Figure 1 (cartoon, rainbow, N blue to C red):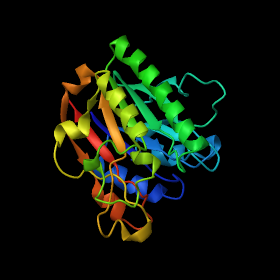
Figure 2 (cartoon, rainbow, N blue to C red; figure 1 turned 45 degrees about the horizontal axis):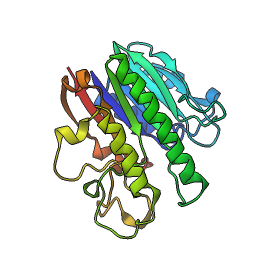
Figure 3 (cartoon, rainbow, N blue to C red; figure 1 turned 30 degrees about the horizontal axis):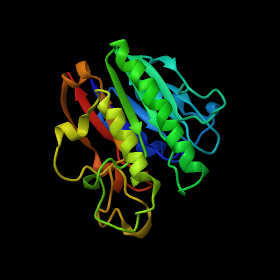
Length: 256
């Protein structure tokens, strides 16, 4: 099973890009983030025409997450992250696909920090840590996939001091990610590629794509049994270089 995660940064604006990548890369499951489309505006029929069924949580203008599956319909188990019934932002969806429980996570950015957005980010992270612990305890094979909006270590960002105050690299953000890992999850891409850049995001500004000044924001955390089945993975960097591209590239793993 080839599982991918891709922050599409407006699914309708970049639908041609998405379809072209799906046809070329042929992932079995795709976790999408930042749909920027309300529930009724999701292009389900277009995706179905190229072989993918989908479940999604839309949100007008911002956020939005989806899970696509080739040749089968994902079975939704959760459409919101538990822990705060008043949080209506569409940032989490969870579904079973071919015996694997898969999430699409769009963790809050948190900028500017300090401030209420960073406080929300850390609170959301705490809820994710709690729910992830429950998923791990269930014994099910689980892949926590998505855009975590966290650069886990200094090796996951190009050398710079210009982002020292950015919420993505704050010690609190990195500690939360580390606490999640310490529950027993495997950071799949780093397990496969322990050294060197694994950029999944390049800002539109300041020629960061041209100069390859990227960072790793998109992650797969695998439960122990699923980690044993990890056979490959990488980043489809070419997608970021296409016309009208998202500022993220799809990351993917192969489970056997």
